Image (cartoon, rainbow, N blue to C red):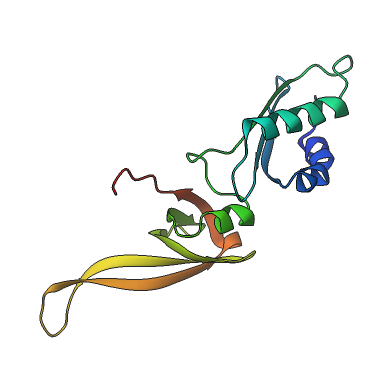
Length: 156
């Protein structure tokens, strides 16, 4: 069976040459290799084909039979790499931290190590007792985040 680390190491230098970054690699027990790659502008079918051909050139099918899929991570998958947060600036995210805290907010800042969400809540004004929308900034280190997903909304 082909090892995940072997696939990662062969892509480590190649993907940046192509303007791409590696999001994730999985290898199932049946030797099904799944590679998710992306770039700040998105990844094209032609780029996926190029990465697939590169991987095929690195492994000999005569000694190790495998199935290969190269694609973008898709909107339904959680964000895993700091570059994905940078790419998602301005979008709404659902975030769950390792301590179980769930937060939804607009991603307003992202660095290699932390993110900042602008959250909204409805609270009663202390003076008028009317409900008002209160915006707050919520900052977390990326290593404190268990899962972060882009909120898909069809509203305009």
